[in-house]
Each structure stands twice: as structure tokens, then as C-alpha cells.
Length: 176
Image (cartoon, rainbow, N blue to C red; front, side, top):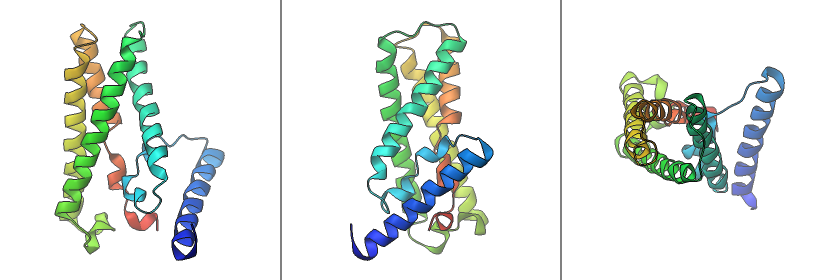
């Protein structure tokens, strides 16, 4: 990449990676939900690979931790569950992103969502609806792999809460 585009993407990517290193080094915290910043993919297209891989890892951790906490031995079939849940979560996130683009578009509130109450409520509602859909889908599909309804509910609730597209609530002005 060269020219202005290369300077923009290199600068933004450098700021992002330095910020992540600083958080990890100074505060010894892990940044889980910053793995799916769809709003950054048009700025830095190679981030799609990182976003997909990171999403798969986070989804896998959530599902396998729920299974372990419920003393269910992880089988080869659970990888099929993980892959389906991952794909469904991505689809729901993309639909949520499209809903935000159709409602907010490229207006001034698309970049500073917390400056306007109506926009902020709209963004929060989209994230909550996406989380509910992800939770319901995970609950429904986990029934095919796990017969215990309590575990199905735990998977649905955990995935709905932990893998909702929380990064939609990060104002784009914080990134560039």
C-alpha cells in the first residue's frame, strides 16, 4: 500500500496495535470484545482475517468454558456446534451493521454515537437485539448436540451476552 491510503491505514493500524500493547503491558488486561471491529474493516481490509479468527477463538472459549463448567466432555461433534455458532454470530453481526448503516448511514451521528441520545439508544438497541438473536440461535442449535436443556440455556445466555457486537458502541472518532 502506498500514498495517502497507506499512510492512513498504517497510522491507524499502528495506533491500534500500540494501544493494545499498552493495555496488555500496563494493565495486564485482555481485550476480548475488540476483536470484531467491523467499522474498521473498510479502513484496514486485512483486519477481516484477524476479526474472523479472533471471533472464532472467543466463541470457542465461551462454548468450551460453558461445557467444562457443566462437566460435559468435549467431543469432536462440539466443533461442529462451534463452527455453526461462529458463522451465525457473524451473520447476526453483519445484519446489525447493515441495520445501523441503513438507520444512521454516514451522517454526523455515525461517528460520535454518544453525542445524540436517539442515536445512542438506537445503537444500544441494535446491540441488544443482536445479542438476543445470537443467544436464541445458540440455544436452539445447541439442542442438536447437547440434550441437557440447562446447558443449552447456559450456552445461549453466555453467547448472547459475551459475543454480542459490543464494539458497535465504540465511537468511530476514537479510532481515527
